[in-house]
Length: 289
Length: 267
Image (cartoon, rainbow over all chains, first blue to last red):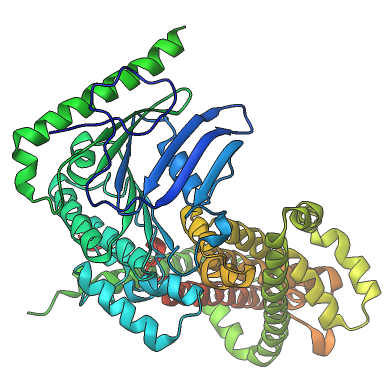
């Protein structure tokens, strides 16, 4: 087990891990570069302070931290959904205008399934293609493929309310898949689901990542989920929101459910939990001052 | 195995209020007969039914006139109200600039401005229609604007991520999402269109060929034809109920697959 602090960040605790080592054979093209990003809301709340993070092609990066540490804010900035106060964000080493062009597609999976309740599953999944004016024959095939991959074949004519929470989330993932994204941003997508469904969907995401070659940035509250899924876990602290640790999970993919019950997994969880405790402590001590 | 009628929810929904109505009418009839109440004070249900039959011709033409004004006002309110809401939602500036005037129309009593409108507009039907529109349009504007603005922010973010046009955003997201609010507005507005038409008729006091049910009530009151007065009142009430039921039916048809308000909950 090697855990590494790889990205130079804000003031961070003493590294407990090995120095950064590039993963053997891993592609190194930066997909996302966030540098010195501050986000201050109109009411003066500092949501992010000096956030810096680079995500390379093929990585699975989880953002982990206590509530209010700016994980979702950072993810929305990465999606181009929020303006930064200061700092820069680059997508595929270019400005946001590149997003959407061939090889630079981005999709976002929200905390809730965020489906249109008035539309059937098929229409929901097809939405991004309709918005991009993709031809009907092409979009129908993509929708069929996506529904099959997420295991929703046969539910395409259902309304969202007729599906369970887990199935709705699968539909949401299928909707992200149809655009064949190169970068997938997921904002705590399985937070509201029971543990069994969550574990199942975790495995599904890993399978789909392997099949589609996605680069994923994933927001979660769960240490276990972060360790199981990620190649890197980025730990954030609150007040102000900042990145305080970056832990490499040096376990090759594919990962089987057996990984969850291994001592290696327990070791990573302990390490991430300690980093998280330190991050939480930082927020409190700052507040107490 | 057939279900007993008493356990049939649909049957109970219709039969229960009907039973109450029949009981009230019976009690009314018995009371009037027992206390020998004169017809010009409180007519019995039988007297009213008799009047409905004997005065059918005049009542029916009055009903048609009231219905004409009501429908015209309702249709204009829906078209103009939705158009105003679509305009408001395009820009906060437009909404802030114009919405107070919509409120102004709502809070101004129609009886106070009806005489002016009747003076300004030559055609009585249109004068009455304008008065009814003033009463009926606000719920459509208010509800539809609220609905068009109450979009799931995440869905809106997604649309913006795909750089959609305003038109796509409106047609694919805002309008379908606003439907429950719009139908809520329709339910209120349909009743208000009728109330507006009746109130305007009272103020205008139009007789002759353009006499509506309100005029019929006034005229019957002057002539102490109280059963006819009640008959006209019943026709107004029935019209209101039918209009409301039609709106509920339309709303259920449009929303039954997805919106909580129209879903049948199974226990």
